[in-house]
Image 1 (cartoon, each protein chain N blue to C red):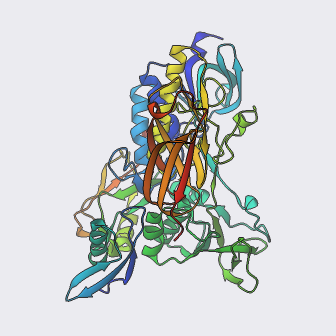
Image 2 (image 1 turned 90 degrees about the vertical axis):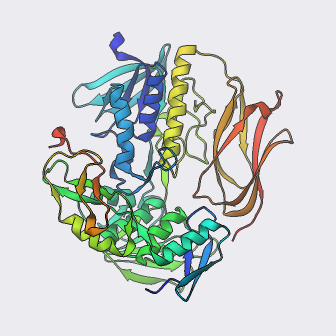
Image 3 (image 1 turned 180 degrees about the vertical axis):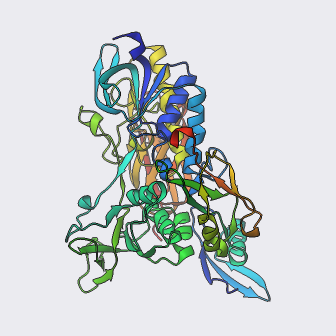
Amino acid sequence: MPPERFYDVAVIGAGPAGLAAAVAASDAGARVTLVEREERPGGILKQCVHDGFGLIRFGEKLSGPEYAYRYLRLAAERELPILTQTFLLALERDAEGYRLRLQNSRQGVFELCAAAVVWAAGCRERTARQVFIHGDRPAGIFTAGMVQYMVNVQGYLPTRRCIILGSGDIGLIMARRLTLEGARVLGVFEIKPEPSGLMRNVVQCLHDFNIPLHLSSTVTRVHGPKRVEGVTVAAVDERLQPIPGTERTIACDALILSVGLIPENDLIESSGLPLDPRTGGPIVDQNLMSCREGLFCCGNALHVNDLVDYVSESGETAGRAAAAYVFTGRRQRELIAVKAGANLLSLVPQQLDRKSGGAVTFYFRSAHTLKNALLTISAGGQILKQKKYLVLRPPEMQRLVFEQAAIPHNAAELAFAITGGGGE
Amino acid sequence: MKIPEELTCIECPLSCTLRLKETDGKIEVSGNQCRRGEEYGRKEALHPCRSLTTTVATGYAHCPRLPVRTAGEIPRELLFAALREIKKLVVREPVLTGQVLIKNLLGTGVDVIATGELNEQDI
């Protein structure tokens, strides 16, 4: 392969995670290329015209496109190549690192090589077929992100009267956006007893516009052979089963789904890379290296984030570590497991490389809403760190920096558990 | 103006339910667990403000919408009037991120700025 086709680090995806990774790897001296399947870089931020991005990183409330622009400028200053409208067909390991088979309309199918790869492919939305919605399959059933694209990028209003199923952040944001654009959002229905989006969004997107939020309720049927004409909703019991007699039918022209996001890892998963069933992303160490040497993962492909600031942070960690991996050469890792115990919904990283010392940044979510909770980190029964939280909620990911020096040398694993507290 | 009886505080993840009471033009806040809650409750009761984000039409088929926002917060009751004003705008020339598109929106002292770009390649 000619040398111009050989890079130190190839970054898959030019959204906020990939851009941050590419900039960090480049600043560490690596030759970097980015691969992006869309026409323009920036990822999902391009369609997130609402504000609130960058509060932690820049101390400002930016809109999605502005946040993306800051990183696009950093990438442009470093003249990082971005292969747009380019699909990754295969990723194979060889003696020198990774061989990427790519395809676009300019070069056809072609190959690039990279000593390390940063996987930053983001996530995708759960669809109607994945939440068992029965009835006809008319036009007018959309995911919230699809509606966001239609309204904000294409300039179409795909509904006049709609129901939103699921209270994820994109659904809440779109409830406000559609209301401002003149549509009527008749209600948001959430099967669980608490909202799955951030409280800030419940208040500013629903309360502000008197949009009702129906908890412990779901959509049981969609009506209309060609276009959505209405939906049947019902209350659910503790086992999330519809309660007979509570059904009512609401006339509407669209059903919008905000029922969860799934990290996009099909290509690396099919190659046998172990994923964490809690996050849907690869199992990684604190350098965000997966179980495969030289393959790093960050952003929403690693685990679904609620703040882009943390997406960028993980991109920087992965990019910097990928460059270091390339320059310091391969070495044996000394991995110990990090166990997500009681009351943890997810925990990243899932393992620690004891050979790279220093502080480790952990991200976790609690499995339920817990008040006056106590997080305990221990090794072999010995408590290493405890932290109190007035409240932990599953929609709000927590970030915790932990000094590795506290871990005994002979520790076989590190265990996280949350105790105390209770629901509301 | 009638003040709401209850509010959810969004200053931190605790999400306290604030109860508001007006006596002789003064707002009393209860249910909060810290001072930020009290300030939030009072501000929300008297002058709730929000930033407004939306898009405006462009003259370019390849890039039909340009995202915009208010550069700061405006009174919440002006949101729909502000939106009608912003919707009158059609952008027909290249625009840079951060460029002011409307000065002093509805006399609020707050500008409307572009949060995306329209450059030569897009047109």
